[in-house]
Length: 163
Image (cartoon, rainbow, N blue to C red; front, side):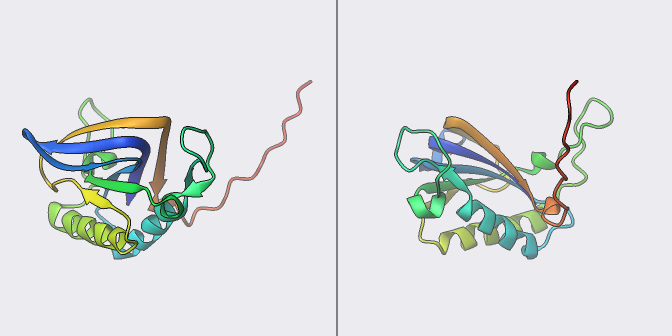
C-alpha cells in the first residue's frame, strides 16, 4: 500500500459537475493498493497517518509539532491506482502492480472505516470514478508512505570528510 499525503488548507472532489466531498484544514490522502496488499497493510498505514506530526502548534506557523489526531483536522481519502504506475520501460505507464478493482475497493473501504473510528471528519472520493480534485497545499507538505518499506533496515549514516 502506498499513500501520498498532502497537508491542505482545504480540498474538494467532484465527479462530473457534482461536489462529492470537501474538507477544511487537514490531510488529502491519495491511496494506492498493490496487488499483493492485504488488510494488514491498512493498520500500518492508518497508524502512521494518524500519528505523523505534520501540523504546527499554531495556525499559520511552520513546523511539524502535532498529528492530525491531536489537532482534530479533517481527512479526505481518494483512491489512486496510478501510485503504482511504473515508467521504467516504454513511454506509457504500466499499472500491473496495482490491485484489481475488487481488492482495491475492499481495502479502500476498510481504510476509510478505520479512519472514521477516530471520530475525525473523514470524507472520501468515489472509487473507480474520474474525479477532479481541487486543493490548497499548505506548506507545501507532501509525504509518501509505502508499507513495503516498514521492514527495511534504516540506512547507516556515512561520515564524509572533505579535504
